Amino acid sequence: QSVLTQPPSASGTPGQRVTISCSGSSSNIGTNYVYWYQELPGTAPKLLIYRNNQRPSGVPDRFSGSKSGTSASLAISGLQSADEADYYCAAWDDSLNVVVFGGGTKLTVL
Amino acid sequence: QVQLVESGGGVVQPGRSLRLSCAASGFTFSNYGMHWVRQAPGKGLEWVAVISYDGDNKYYADSVKGRLTISRDNSKNTLYLQVNSLRTEDTAVYYCAKDQQLLLGGGEPPGDYWGQGTLVTVSS
Image (cartoon, rainbow over all chains, first blue to last red):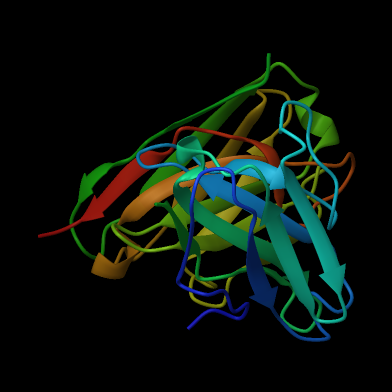
């Protein structure tokens, strides 16, 4: 059972906008930065969003992150078939002094 | 360009030990904290440990505390993970990853560069 809670699955059609939620607590998301990763089958995770809403160079602006209180969201607009992957949120937890990950959300493009 | 290359994985019997390495290049290794993250077959990402840029601070997941030791040699641009008393539940792909920001090591999740991973299989 993960400290950060994500829906196990999400789906959308090409061109649509989808959001993936990540719920935590005051000791992690509530006080620290949220990161988001994309994991394509058989490949290493790729950083999509860091420090809540910052995109590394090379990440399309179709991907955006936001945070409010103890929850965060990843939004993907203009959905493409190439976006079909697993998505994970993560944050530092001040109470545990560890990085905590969400359980992951499998995104299906219909 | 930034490269992280893990090595040292393989098939190991329960109770044995293993040392994983992560060779870094393309950035100033001594300026960045480094993480180990693992993924068991068919499961999600599990953070294992982080070490600060200077090696002074180390943090571990509760599930591995006492059995795993993270270390680094900045003169060799190499990160290590010593895994003792291996259990079947340690079977996973182990990734090393660098911090996104300078001079950290604890406080934020892994950043923009990850290795391709090394598979550790614990089996008798």
